[in-house]
Structure formats: structure tokens, C-alpha cells
Amino acid sequence: MSMTNYEACGVIHQFRGDALITNTMSAMFAITAVSPSPLNLASVPLMGGASGLGLGLAIAQPGRKVFVLDGDSSLLLELGTLAQIADVAPANFIHFVFNNGIQFSGVANLDRPGRKLDFCAVALGAGYISARRIGTPGALAEAMTELLEAPGPHMVELTITPPAKFARQTPQPEFPDLQFQRMAAEAEAMMAALGTTR
Image (tube, rainbow, N blue to C red; front, top):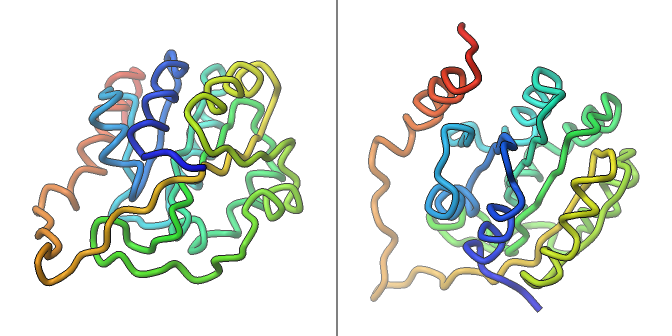
């Protein structure tokens, strides 16, 4: 069983409250559409950076929940952050991995290497408090209350329906320059919303 990016982000939106959200790749467009907020921070073009940014926010804002909406390929680039997150053990940290088995979702649609990799096992091995795999919006909604109440860090691997691959008849669209400038703009907006300065 699986769900779409938008279904997963819809559930996350219902439970986010004032949580800070770092996001990347497949989750980025969905969370922006479903839960627009100055408390969202995209990590593109820093691919693989969502978990590290989230850890920094969790340390700086211990009174708020921090949700990391990571991509499976993105996390593969920065698996070392799992060890650092587990060492710091931020109680307010929930790490969602949008696992669709595709690399560069929305760009080249290549199959992701390490298709047998168990992100939950890796997170638990690193020292996360809990890890679970969830494949439906209903199951995610059921899990959210417990995830929000129990101290983290928590790993939630979401089984996401892969997008259709691009073909000659449906070529990939060109990315606007704004896509690669959004991280700076969103960082400025988040600092303003939190009342912090450079």
C-alpha cells in the first residue's frame, strides 16, 4: 500500500500546529501547496540537507516540533546526519522519509540505488528512539498523536506512490530559476516569523 505526496502532506498539515518544517524533493511542492507557511524551509538546491537543517532548527527552537520531510535519495546523500541526530537526540524531532524508490523526482525519474535499504533499520541502528513504516494516510493519522506526544527523535518511512516517468511524449519540464532561489527566501521568511535576525 502507498499514498501520494499530497496525501501524506495533507495528514502532516492537520497535525503540524506551529511546527517548523524542512523539506526537499518530492515533498517540497506538496507541502508548499497543502500547508503554505513562513515556517516551511525548502533545502533545494542543498540536496540531502533537509535533515541537517532540521537538526539545527530543533536545537535552536526546542519548544517547537520540527518535522523533516526528506526524500529517500536525498537522505542517501547524507546518511551521516542520522548518527548526529541520534547523538544530539532532540526530543522535538520527527523525520519523515518520502520513499518512492525514485531518484530526482520530478526531474529525471531514475530508479534509486539501494532499493532494498531499510531506512527504519538504519535509523534505529543510529540510535533514533523509534522508527516505523507507514503506507496509508489513515495509518499516518493514527500514528501522529503518539509521535507528537513521545519524545524523539522519530523516523517515519512513508511508502509513496512513485510518479510516472518522463518519456518522449511527456518530457520533463524546465525548472525556473526561482526554484533554486527559494531556500534563501524561505530562510528569511522563517527568521522573520520567529523574530530572529542574522
